[in-house]
Image 1 (cartoon, rainbow, N blue to C red):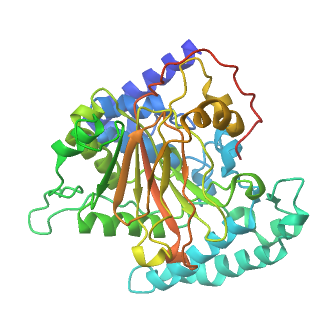
Image 2: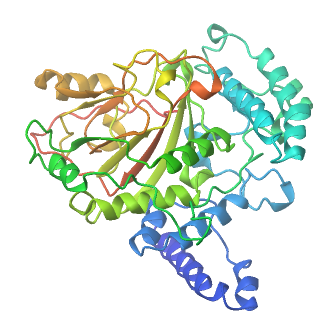
Length: 430
């Protein structure tokens, strides 16, 4: 394990060195192509660049790894098969779910309409004539959930699906442009993404419990992004075909995931992560970005079950317009105020929610802070706190999907309590 980390460190150091040379010499461009990129960057790699304020290096490393992965629609550029880590968390290319494929179909149809508007006629035609009908044919063949009990709702692609060509397009980066930073059209200067009117001091006092009626470690921030950034990030999440993760619908509900190490690597998102870090030093001090993801939810399912995330600070940002939410009093997040004791093992307590409810939450009478959904609202909270998606009722339709963006900083700061029996793992969270 130590030699692997050493090798990874040497690779990252060579990446950083090449970045310094790249802008000034042709030789650097040639050597850049010879870097032996790993098949996947991990949280330590992301934090390595972030700690050094090297977002250019982080973006360059993430995009190069992704372009060499099995997600590339051009098979000639693929250098690595899908890592088992991506497959086991639901991002494989040999299976799907009905709700996930329906989302992909709706996204392809949405892109056809958007790209026809003098943006990319060739891609619009490819999606309309090839991708949309193929997705529809495979979707029509997926049995109802009661016939997929053995796989908990997963549908392995059948020979007929493969003959149609599903493996050539499913979970591929069919349309994955880079959404860069917002810039002033006259000066080219990079524009901020955070709302300039945020009361940053008050946000930090609330986090520390220094404000009246505040709950330490839980802060709600409305209108966190400026309007241009909100529009741009929402466009990114609607258009970019990087929603590769599905879940077992009979066990975990119905939502698709996109991740920083698997295509969700856009420069504007990295800028957001750094602006948050620099704007809130009392909250973020020493907690570097380690991960980032987005989830998109099917209106007919429930959201994410009770869990905690392995981080110090969790930023959960909602992007869907308010008129899509049929119940403005719900649809957000439930954050329980109890933290896991330091002797609980992460993967075990995160897979046995009955144990957590009985041993940790019930003694506190399930004390929680419930935050309703609102577009451009962010919830910042101590990531060790158990939380779950609130009940939601959103309109049907692709643009009405509930979408959240999550950024994780630092490592988990567990609470303290007497030793308890630890729950047992029930395996994969696919």
